Length: 429
Image (cartoon, rainbow, N blue to C red; front, side, top):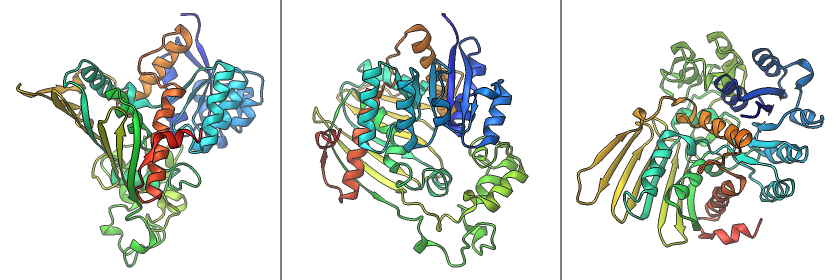
């Protein structure tokens, strides 16, 4: 071990402040926070006090931080989708390696630019496809690579977004409008579009897709619905999307039930019943879900034809009571049914009794994306400090494959389900 990795944080939202910054406590001998930046001075002050960042290393924006002489070894880019590339390019040109939140960008020209600069500067760029690093998906990869069910011929996968997560992130929240951020299939499902081809060792050839915004729009508002949940809404008692139910009363997400982490920590720097109620009263998370400026889809299906003639199908849907991913892998020698919510992998080899693997017994850390967040940082530190390149680490080039599929899926969806060849998308790059 040569030294600690000095890290600068550009963006102190949920992913920067609440997910990656705390990993310094897990790896105190390998990582230190050298500089921070955010447009919210309260978040900058809070993180500076928590991790001992001096005042002259605290900045009011990523651009201000990156304008300084080099302050660290690597930068964590955890800002909004359309800021990633501009900030990552500036960081690489300053000599930083980069850990960057997904997606890379919803703009093809920006994706071209970051790939070009990474090659020219020789810097590492690791994209946060954190699910690759979970015990669950690592076990699936091990089973499939071992040929447990032969060659994978077809995959059926479901991304259960969960009704309150859709409301929080994609109706009321930061990723509600693709004109400001990214299409849903890129922002939410680039995890899935990265995972399944990687798990099966396949390459996508062509894509078709259908979907839209079915429920969360003004014409579907119940009679008597108010513009805000606390403004005398007459259907409040029967509405499952009511902000008080989600952020105050829900057993899983409500502050009154003891949850002061995500999603409540998005509403208030230090969530309390009082601060959450105030946020609902005055902020975007208290708006009626039928009267927001959202335009991203609440359901979408994507069909993938692979280059070897095999197929995959992904369904993303908001209308589920629970979150988590579910998939069935069908191979020439058997099938695997994988339920991430239950952490169960069920294996059926032809002619043999089915076998179940309880993934919860294979590891201890299932915090943060089922253990993926912390493991990603661990492997980034191994790369930076020891030169170890993990087999599942998501380089810029690998991440681009999922983006090609997402761009093709969105083009197909917008054009009525037209079959889009991946080569057509790659020509834009």
